[in-house]
Length: 111
Length: 123
Image (cartoon, rainbow over all chains, first blue to last red; front, side, top):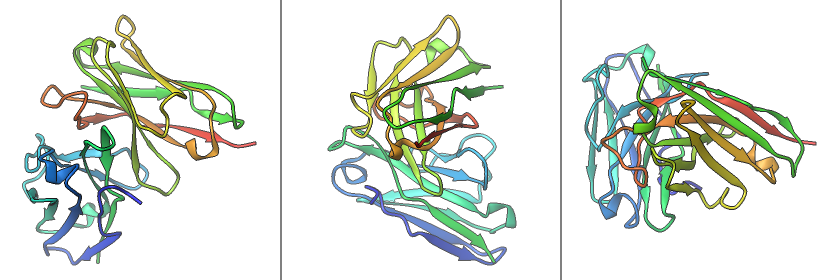
C-alpha cells in the first residue's frame, strides 16, 4: 500500500488528453511538500518529467503538465502519442515517515 | 553529459551482504546530494537512502535503517550502498540518482538516474 495513491492504469487514443491523479494526505502533499513526476518506459530507468508540482525540465514536451491542489496532484498529457505508453510515478516527501515517498505507479496505454 | 553507472549487484543468500557502487561523471560530484531508489520486480519505486554532497548527512527509509549504509568517495566520484542482513524483500533493481541543487537532501527529487543493478536475495 503506497502512501501516495495513483490509479493502476489509464488509457487514451492518440491525440486525446489523459490525466493521472496522485492522492496523498496532510503529512505529505497536504502539508505543502512539492510533487514530482517520473516516466518509466518499458525496461528503462525512470526519467524526471515534472518537478516542483508544475515545472518541466529542459527537453520535456509541453504536452506534459502538472498541477497540485490540497492533498492531491495531477499529471496531464495532451496530444497523446504512442511513445507516451509507459509507467508514471508521482513522488513527494512525507513528514510522518521522514522520507521520500512514491505513488504506486500508473500504466498508461495508448489505444 | 551526466552519467551514473551502477555495479555490484548479484545473487546473495538471505542474511548476506553486498556493496553497490555508482560511478558518476559529467558533473561536479561533490557538489550534489545523491540517493538510492529501488524497484522490486514488477513493482513500483521505493526510496532507500540519501546522502549530502559532503557525506556528512545521511538518511534512510525505515525498511533499511540499521541494515544499509550509504557513503560516498568524492575523490573517486563514487556513491556506495553497503547492504547487510539482506532479506528476500530486498530483491530489486537498485538505481542511484542525482539530486539537483533546486532540491534538498531531505526533500529531494531526482533529475538523473543510472540504469540500475539487480540484487537478488535467495537461497
